[in-house]
Length: 217
Ligand code: C5J
Image 1: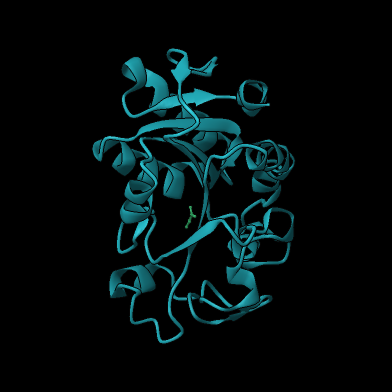
Image 2: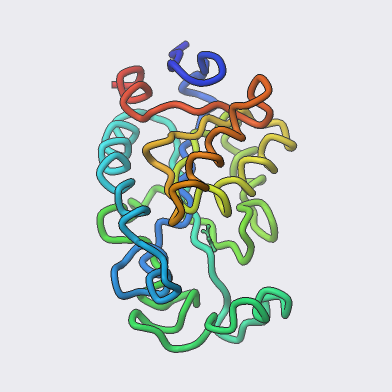
């Protein structure tokens, strides 16, 4: 079994029961001039994950382990967007630089060019922050016999955390790759990663992607 140097302890996994989860690497969040930046966020904080993620995807695609991408967004009629979310995000569904913001089918809603999914990779569309809420992710993982998740994507303290916390409650062992997750806020990135591995790995493990790539190459 490959073992990755991780916090708080080494992370052991096998090639038959582990999947890579790539959370919300969407143009709306990452492109300069897009939705994320229009909120006053520094997209460079997220874009620093692109290089490490490209290298990780290349190594992962050479194995037999599945890759699942997620996208946060809504139907064009917003029927899957709770009024409480819309109240604090009134720009959802409004025209933006890259189409209607966080709306399925729009250019900005899709995954950035550098990390586009391959045809055999599953894409899960999710209306919430967590990847399990109102999606078929659990069925996808069960069908493939997945018990461990290597988690990447954005943003660390929002969609990555919500997903990892719930995955942990559902019995999955989660390894979060520090250089492949990003927050607009450096202090949230730091604290978000520390929270995962604190208290003996309260809801997961944290490692750097080169340590994992070395194990699967
Ligand atoms: C946010 C996400 N931050 N993917 N979405 O609204 O983390």
